[in-house]
Amino acid sequence: MKTLTVDLGERSYPIHIGANLLSQKELVTPYVNGTQVMIVSNDVVAPLYLQQAKALFTDFQCHTVILPDGEQHKTLTDLNLIYDALLSNHFDRYCTLVALGGGVVGDMTGFAAASYQRGVNFIQIPTTLLAQVDSSVGGKTGVNHPLGKNMIGAFHQPSCVLADINTLNTLEDNQLSAGLAEVIKYGLIRLPEFLGWLEQNMNKLLARDPAALSYAIEVSCQCKAEVVAADERESGVRALLNLGHTFGHAIESGAGYGNWLHGEAVGIGMLMAADLSMRENWISEQDVQRVKTIIEAAKLPVQLPAIMTYDVFMDLMRVDKKVRDGKINFVLYDALGDAKVTHDFKTDNLRQTIEHFQPASK
Image 1 (tube, helix red, strand yellow):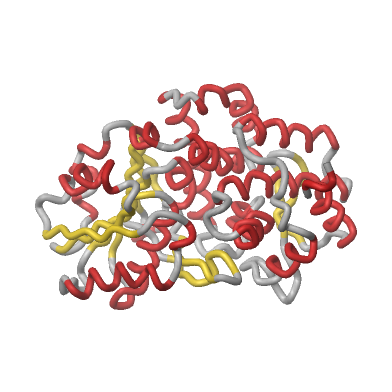
Image 2 (cartoon, one colour):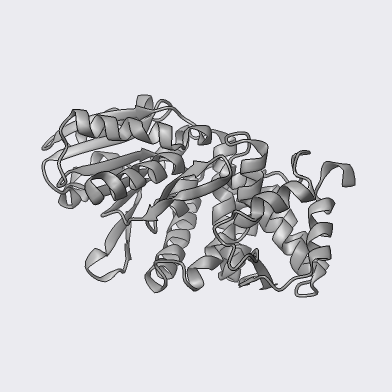
């Protein structure tokens, strides 16, 4: 097992990474507040891991709430299922919520914890690769709106993250690939040596080699922990973690929540960011090909859904959280492993990038 720390002073918390962690209650019970525990999961994860998770909290009054699975259910309406369970079981402000699942469960549980009685304690037990390397760490919580992804939410840090790599054995192949998009992101924004390691070890990761997965998760979490410690509220360097997300969130919204996985949309978004950077003469065509090769190696799509025309993209990106003073910001490349946030690009180049990835342009 590896334990990393997100250094936020009095609000610092551990990230435990390893196998068979769901059987080690001593890793989580010190971080439970009060006597009441509410485990939030979904109807896919609960049949697999709920009993193990409940065994972690046998010393507490433990209740559960099961959400429907899928990004299309990451809504204010479905969030009420958590509030209903908390209120009907008379949970007080000293309770602890536990997120058992992927990014949707984690984001919704965290937002419920941030808002229930103006803020209660919560623990993350991520069961997908994407959640283990990204969404469970850093305190971003929220739900989607029909006009924009994650537009309703709050920053609310967990008290502990427990990433059991055994849960990845039951992950569907497309979900594993979606998680690899966020792993690749860390190499592209600030870890060029890690990017090279990923290029050499992608087959091992797809084959779920435990040593390779553990290393990739550890490096990814360490990178995110350092960025979050330096910029918790995303006023500076943390914005680099949004590489591919301005394009990606628009794809998720435009294609209909749940039709494209978050990691699938981010994967092609990172490639589109490379293409736009090349058109601005910041990186080379060879750099773009390198990004495309690793995205394809991770079995992620490199072509847009037909619905995503230039006009659709622009309408959706104008309500992205990264818009400032009416200007759309992208994370783009000065080099692979060296990213920047900018709105300084030519509109014609953006149009050409979007049109290049449309099916009709192939």
